[in-house]
Image 1 (cartoon, rainbow, N blue to C red):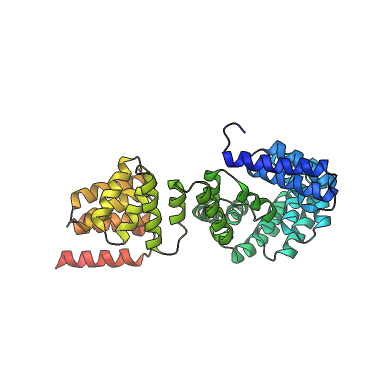
Image 2: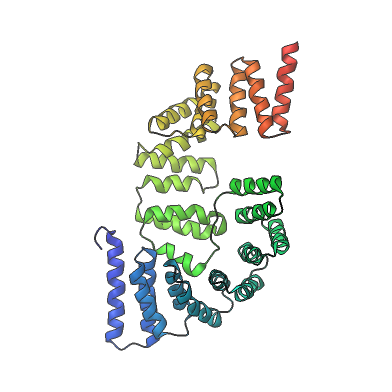
Length: 400
């Protein structure tokens, strides 16, 4: 427990006491298993995997008909890369809980890694039968098809899944591989670019595993997962936030996280102001509040906060962009252009930042430079209506 939060030590001590008490009292095996499993959950949620494994082994040995302890033991072994040892635990899990879709996906992935392709295909299809159109299962079937050289089947799987789940980045990334296999370089680049735009890959929801996060005493880990579950499971995301706030009610990071998930700008503003009240040197809180105040029309206040954020080390395109825009609204065009040049230098391929730069140049009376930047917007985003109209207006103004 050295270095661990006091509350975690207390929770472990109590869980251990109850388990030992049940063993000494000769409690029913299922009762002892439940207590051992709960203690395992606590250890697993707080990165004490070896202790969690010992608890899950005890629980699954005492209550052989409870799929949860077998599954969590398999998950722990899978973390260690023990693919072959995991297989019987996963097979027993789906036998005991055939309706638990995450177990079928885990089994499919496990069998795929071992080269048992037909068993993997069967498990992926069982997952799909339980979760129609599931993109993780379709992705697995496409990977399996590629492994078997069935490129046409892989493409068919991926195109159908993208129609149903267009925001699932991994589908586009694997489709890029298919395009490149067929020599379709341009289509491959487009699919890969789309995958990069959509961001990172998220593992499929798994309530038995994911639910453990709510027992974590690591505030940073809780905050990281708030964003992960915001769209997938908003109620669970709120549970994680509430736990983080209860564990660290004066942690500025908690309120910075909160501002991203409230419904109104006023709520977001209050959250960021609370963050700064707890840490007046929090760079992200200053930057985000400055951007928000720009959008609310408080340009002078926005400039002060964004200047402070930059002074605290924030060097993002967004911070320089909004600082430049706020300065432009105050008529401080020379300063605005300097900041927007900084934003463009940090993100030269972002059309919105180029458009903001053009706006400031126009306000400063630098019509030719504004037209130049608007044309770059059109290079990055062909057909952009706002840029096209702005060029037409500026060009017309030049000829009058």
